[in-house]
Image (cartoon, rainbow, N blue to C red; front, side, top):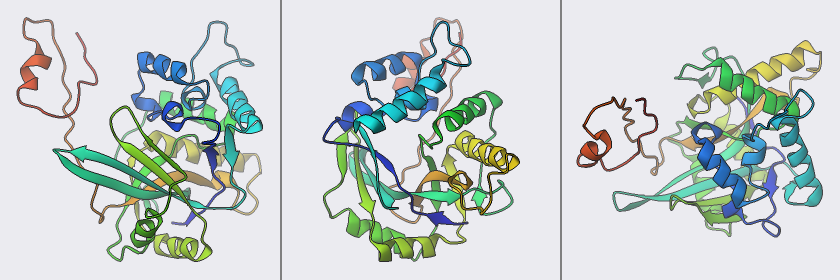
Length: 289
């Protein structure tokens, strides 16, 4: 398994407010929340990553063609900028759990795509055709990874972790607090020696997908499409890689919380209110009556 730096596309803090342009992963954004994200900013990433359908959409005008148009327009107008040199990107999320302040830290890099279960990239979830079709269209129209896959790896040597520790002592490129109270920070890693150390430690290491199975399988399908078109000549073309956020599970800061799924039935018992007495975290994600 190989992880390499890449020329990232970043929001320009001189032109946009990052607190208004970020959005959670597409698969947890409800229709109502999507409306809210649209209203927050004309440059919110939701317009590219998980845009709205419109009446009258067709093969020539749809949310995927609009996503590509937004991406190109924002780059042209300078709301987004692409780095001139290949970098890794340190990313840190600060949050509070049970009154204890914690930090989840990792880095973003381009991971060489391989067949799941046959190499060093390991899944744990089943996937479904509808979201994969949606993610594949984003790739086809935008030619970009618009949402990173969240993955974990294990390194007791913590070479990358020590590099990230040093990086976070510097002024971040972006820093902002989101609705949930979490603080997000992003730094470029462009020092050649640090890049080489990261590549070396990650070489051949197992990676476990925590969130983003549909995005990974979509990237694999897109890679195969490009191969079928005869566009894979060196094996190092961009479509041979996928964007990942990689975090060392040996570091402190990762929290594992239970997921409780509830089916509400038509009864006199208010399940939400009843369970509030016994559960402190989370929310009811799906209800069926």
